[in-house]
Image: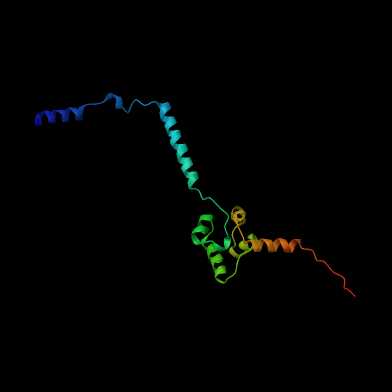
Length: 137
């Protein structure tokens, strides 16, 4: 019984399956397969990109600032400004405080979301008209 088992093991070891021959590969199928793999890699890469949502720039953390492309100095300037209990209320003020480049500001500024009272204050002061009333006698 042991000899028969050993014989089968030797036959299985040396038996070569011709259907698994690697040298016979259809080039068209291989190229199509690699194109499919490349497209799946691109889809995975796109899904890992940073998706920006509206945010208040006053509460940018180190991690969020690094994701946005800000340098450490720019983030530290903003955090120091916030430690003095001061808030950024416009994109111009954000650039003045942090000294970010114009290109970075143009990329992230559309996602700035300031509180309603800040945005309403700006619109109400710019659109207000001064009405003078005459004195009643």
